[in-house]
Length: 439
Image (cartoon, rainbow, N blue to C red; front, side, top):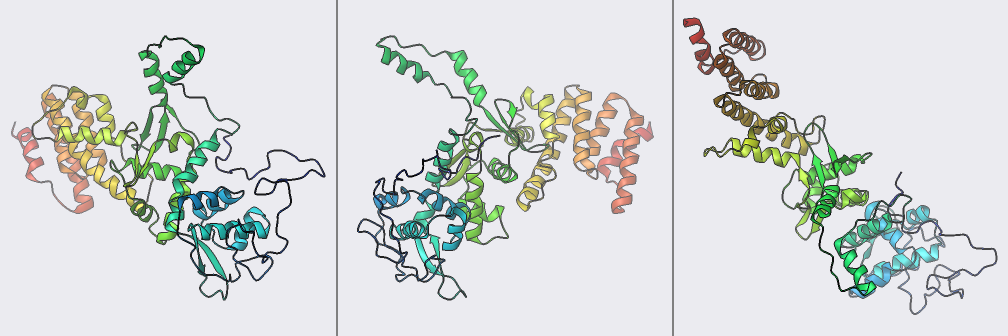
């Protein structure tokens, strides 16, 4: 089992013998810790919030300013100290804001925690807010600039994956050979091996399957034990072929949460992705999207449907293949009941029924009666009360000369329509079977 990818050193690397000197946060072996939480900080330390209680516990700080003018240098200095990344990760992905909650989580000395939080405030990454109805207690809330550190935190998650028990195989690149040749003093440049490059691309190819259920495949092999939150995140992005703004995505996926909580949930879901899944996501100013190389079966099926329904009739042989029929016959994420999934699933159901009927008609023209019948039956399965789907199947039976099958399907549909909706078939259907009775 893969180790959690983002502990950032919360566990000690090794044991220290008794009596050995321990390095302080500044890397020196001289003891520099403050013995009192509200003692004045050192000159090079961030502003101290001066809690009124020894344990901090969110008590009122003297200063309520939001920090000095923001600078990237000061922000990087603030997050580079010991414990800082852990605290920032907890605030960003778990929504922790209270002093005592941070302390319970990490069991860190109150003076160290106070210094780190004060440094975040001073760097403009956090701001101090009064907790409504909690007297003189306050919380440390991430600012916009603090939230913008998310890509850095996630990048560190990716980096830390390599320290797990099973970090996975290294990915070879052609430039490795060029570097090796340069180090050996050789002037020969190895020619790229096209077969090996193709094999590498295939081994890294990622496919997200949304039809018949959710699956992620890397190199043709399904990823096991992908968390439910990660599945929802990848499914949402796979349903959109353009970048989705983070706020829009969070609000859609967590509609019952506040804007702040929804944003935290999104960041938490991103942080929990394993490396293969995380590498499929492109984060840009426009929002989140899948990288172009990721294949999505729904998008392939939608392209097939679009060609089948195009008035020009520019259909390829692949659009009439067994694979195309299988894709069009598959429901989108069955047994998923999120509102954003249900809406997309209904849109796909309507599109594929039209495409299946068009496919059946084209197969019928080519004399492929069995495949034409399969396409028509798939449309009927998607909506048994759809008259045009039943008409497609009856046309196939009549073309084959199977009048009894045509009449049987007509009678079955008419009985279903009467029972469910108390309606009669229209002339679209009755005219087809009327010729049978006349003959």
